[in-house]
Amino acid sequence: MPGFIPEAAAQAADARPAPLDLVLRVNGTEHRLTLDPRTTLLDALREHLHLTGSKKGCGLGQCGACTVRMDGKGVKSCLSLAALVEGREITTIEGLAQGDQLHPLQAAFIERDAFQCGYCTSGQIMAGVACIAEGHAGSPQEIRDWMSGNLCRCGAYDHIVAAIQDAAGATGPARGG
Image: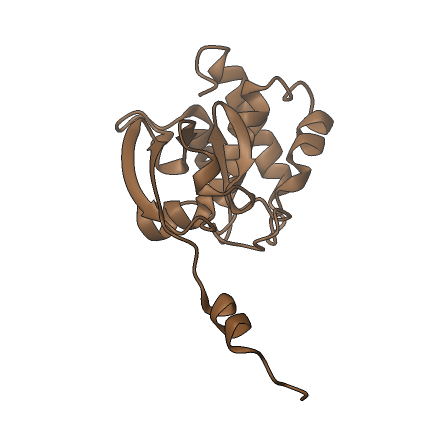
């Protein structure tokens, strides 16, 4: 019969995986969570830890609005399952400043007016921090190439590149953070 689904298949389709207990280390703090194993790192940050700086843009890893740092590397959090990042050090935009002291790239974004609507800003900053820390801020073209996975619909790219250049000069190896 067309449209007929056997009872066992219907039950399997409705079955939810068992929740997982895990510990995420975010911005230097351990958080104990019980999550559906399909939960992305982005959703864990936004919906469970209420760290809403990382934005949900495309959900496909193409826009970069969700960029965070994981073990010192830039990562698109919409592509990472929370269950697979347990034990890793996650830094979000909320954890970038040190108290009231902005990270040099945050300050440079303000100084260079490197944002307009602001939606992509946290992802741009986190990717820019990775760009500097991973040694890819040697020239404007190198910065553009490195940052090509982070989109800005407002077109503030020239200002973003200038801010990264400024911060690269201010951070040095110890502050790439």
